[in-house]
Amino acid sequence: MLIRYKKNYEKIAMGLLSFMPSEKELKRLQQTIKLYEEDENWQLYLYKEEDIIGAIGVKIKGNVAELRHITVNPSFRSQGKGKAMVLELKKLLGDHIQLIPTENTADFFEKCDATSDNTNE
Image (cartoon, rainbow, N blue to C red):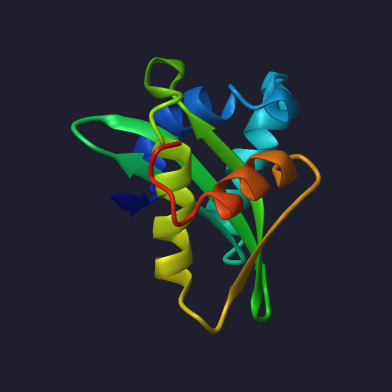
């Protein structure tokens, strides 16, 4: 299930976001977390099963949510967790907000979208 990011999840969120190629640098990672904490248009969600194993973040502008970050703990990859996060986020956003990828998330997003009816990813 997706849970909204809170400050007390900062270390977990930073650890997960650091798996994204664009967030390898500590200073960049800190700036990203600050955006999610301070800008209401930037929304970060953590994916929790027994533990928190993934993160997905969007920047909302009007009726469009830009998928800025999506990451899954390497131990849980290739199990459909990323796709599950995308589908759950789409439900959370509702029909009135369109989820679109950025250049950094496009390949993964298109893979999820193409297989959204097929759970055997």
